[in-house]
Length: 123
Image (cartoon, rainbow, N blue to C red; front, top):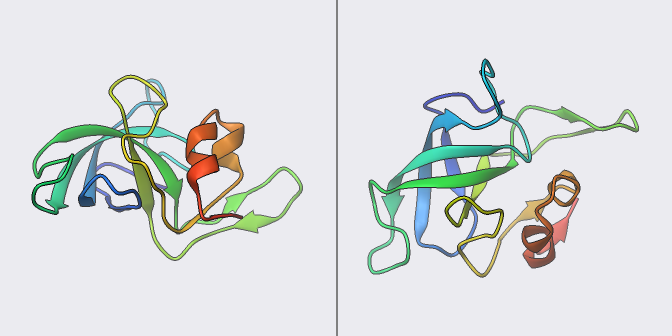
């Protein structure tokens, strides 16, 4: 469950390290985002001389969350951190060229095939 002001790790190679959620783009009235949802965030910590700069407002997709997510078969999946991948403006294409760490299969089911193909491990 990602809500406003939640800090997320960034798992791609755009240069951002930490992102703060400022908006959830699901529809009206949603308070929480989960795996596969698009959020708007502000980069709080970034590496110098990279694609994404500090204080930049970006769109991102949530790829990991600490809260257990129930799958259709009845099993649950949870991770040790909250993480996201930064997207190009208004598209579902990732801005970076590499994704680190495990990615759940729900990402591919939600239409982010490019992120799923770049992932090291699909859980």
